[in-house]
Image (cartoon, rainbow, N blue to C red; front, side, top):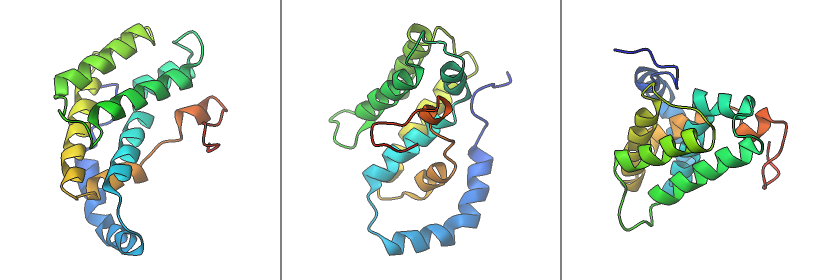
Length: 162
């Protein structure tokens, strides 16, 4: 099997963190009502924040300007595709096509490391879990979020958050 230069394989890591932070997440869940849709959206943002190829594209200026804004537009597009309100949930290949098109068309790069497919699978799995009210894995991704793509450019997003 080929080595991936995309996000690290988080399956084992996620399982270990899930076990150790179950009590913490239970405590969090008791403190505030759970908005599964918001947690899911934050988990998707976290997944993109840790995607090595996208971070490199933004940091290295592969989109000929406004990289962070273009990356954010990609995240927004994917979130719109998989929103809880959509009538038809896209399949993995549809999400993968959007990601490949953006990486190639916008960032002038190619993702040949399996990261696009891994991200597509993970997003759909988390969507199904969150739709069923199970936000534990999504919260793990949120806790592991890397600094925002905007922060790597020294800019703030529209909400004024770094």
